[in-house]
Image (tube, rainbow, N blue to C red):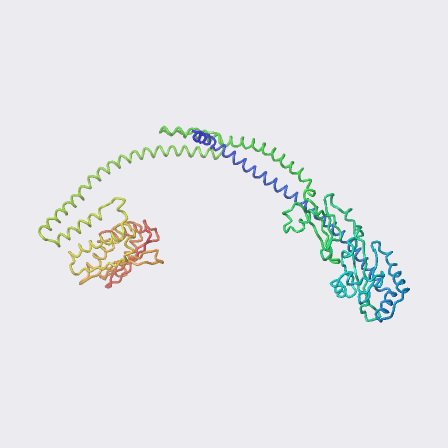
Length: 578
């Protein structure tokens, strides 16, 4: 019961007006969703793009200030290692001369005087070529101070400044180093300069002033990946290692300086970048809801106007269930509805006329069936007579004549049967019919008639229209062998073609054949599209040709080849699928 109730409710809903209304609402909903999603996506993308450009500009400015500090530090260390007193002192050291305490003290004063040009410098350290410290005065050598790997890197740079990074001895300082190249000694190595720089000095780059908002975080890494400056909390470090940035809730923008090879990274929460999107989202939802209500009312009104005339016509058509179709009165509506009503009225008139015609034809058909039943008496009388004759000959031991009578009976039975089930037969049945026909013809022609049938076993099951081949055999016997003096042979063969999808059927005789004129006349009759008898044939070749086209298509036809005195060959192709 619940199922039937729901089904009835659904049937009431399944009206043209409701379908039009549903389609309108569905399309409008899709349009509103599409426009809303696209608008939201575009605005969000623009906000993200503008924020990213602003962050990129901030990074560029920060990198510029870092490069400026780096250049200042590079220039300062270059001035120190090329100072005349520093050069003379280290040349004396290379030459093996002893440096007095006073010389060391003056060297310290000269080097420390450069500290006033750079606020971030904590101290300077000088080392000899054999890594011994000149000042400050203690026993720590250069290997202990920075390690062998950094010494090799300093040598490799041949006088260029090397950023070592965080001081191995104190995390609050950065260390830079430079090899002292002696200008008066073929620019050979004279010693090493180490400079300690306060880590707080790089905060003067203004990262705090250049924040995009209060939730942005900055990280500066040197070429080796060591931290120079960071305001990034530890819990956000993983954001830097996510391959697809879309998978996080943060925008990560980074830039590497071509001069310092330092990388500046700014991490910003996405929600801070698209705060205005929430207002836009609410506006889209509100406008979409308002538009949906207006469009729903419009769709309901429009669907009612469109379907009202159709509903009236439907009610008139329902009146035809009692057996009488009524004409619909004109309804003032659209052109299409008027044409529909006019067509319906014309259809009603035609149907009423056809009903009368069918009634009259049924009367005629009933009379024809009665006559057909009466006409069936003659074939049955013929079959019964032949059957009685057959058994009479068997009793008299006239087996040859009895066989002849039996073949005649089977020929009549095969030919006269007209039921729909017997319209199509297998090739095996058609061949058996041909065999019986030839046996009957041998009674007339005797040993003059010879026939050969060559059909592969796997083709015997193919179905063809009844009497498609036998008339061709009959034509070959009567018009080919009948007019010939001496023994005549009729050959029936079948072969596969077209990759096994088609069957080529050939009926050939070695009779008198036809000259070109006779052959031309015969072909013209076959292509005339009219069914008439070919002179002297039992079943017309034109009939066979026409049936071939009706059953298998207009492109099918009988192909006839004949030469006077040599015989005639008739071929045609049919699909094996029947």
